[in-house]
Image 1: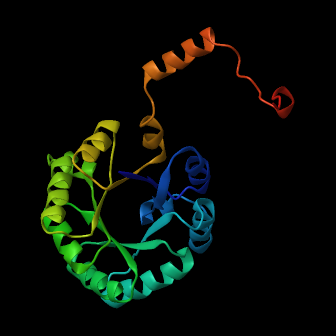
Image 2 (image 1 turned 90 degrees about the vertical axis):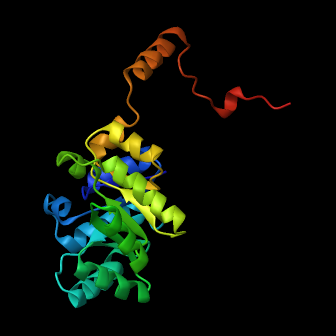
Length: 226
């Protein structure tokens, strides 16, 4: 399973891409609105922070098919590949996805809450679908079960679309979708750090530090040649 970072904060991105094996960053209008930078500068800055090889997923905001298509093309030029336009799975969104795929634009179908939304988006050509796990849980749904069903549907129908699970509030949800076969997850910075945390790890490291020698600083002058 691949890990992506769900934020538009450049400082967080710069720090965490050095600390974790991240393959990309996802954003949305809500995350972008929290930042004080002009939109164009922010997107260029995120690309600079993650480098040319990691994915960048940026959501469109237009509400008509032609507007979404034109916006996605402009975003692709701004963000630079590997880029994926995030498009909600409405009837208009599906039309836009089909048009964009004909033009070779990467697409992530977002705001997915049902298995059939995901399947239709996959048939339309979406590269990723993003089911919202915690938002389903909040309305007495079962986000993990939906992710599991979507993975199963893609497998039995031999579809290349990947599941990019999103909307998490705790580590258990992330773990559960990984067990359900999700290809990727996108998580907020604070939750990403919790994926590595365990108090017993901290206790073990403290004990190693107490019992072991100080960290040696190797240098060429202590290495003898035969």
